[in-house]
Image (cartoon, rainbow, N blue to C red):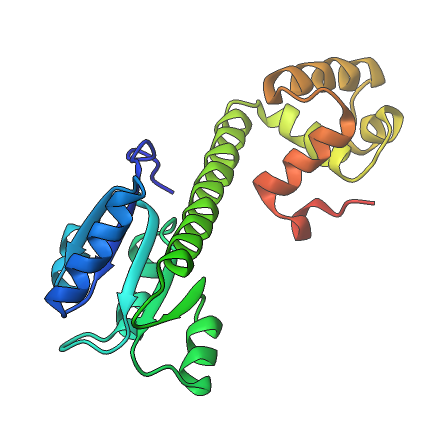
Length: 214
């Protein structure tokens, strides 16, 4: 995943075709110290939002052109770190269930009460920042893994399977002392303090299904 714009600040993106609602939301959020960008329609928002955007997207459900649900689907494909809060004047159980199943962090009914708005936005921004931070950490691990030699990767596989040095040496057809040397370099390159930490890194880099952890 491209992290070239990973330093972007958290921003609240308000998308609503109602001008008075956009202005009211912008004023309320800016008064609380949030950075805000407002858009009148889904298409202009999608054209302007950067792929690495973090923060919160406040989306009106019913808009001309692309509606809120359609926008959420398009946004998920473009912005991995930007979760959604829906705004609607017509809240009902089916639409709320649909919103939550599609991954929305919250659904707010218009007119939105200030405390509810701030709580929902703050919580959503926190989730967005955490998601970006987790992805940055995984990317760093992938970069370290890419610097390993082919033999070190083989030893890594053995460590992830819970093998002792002797078992790894037998499987790889090399001396046990050679396994120890590669294992020491592996720990250093991956910046792992313990074997358990190294095994956790393997899961992060290659996935739990590939790790065969015991």
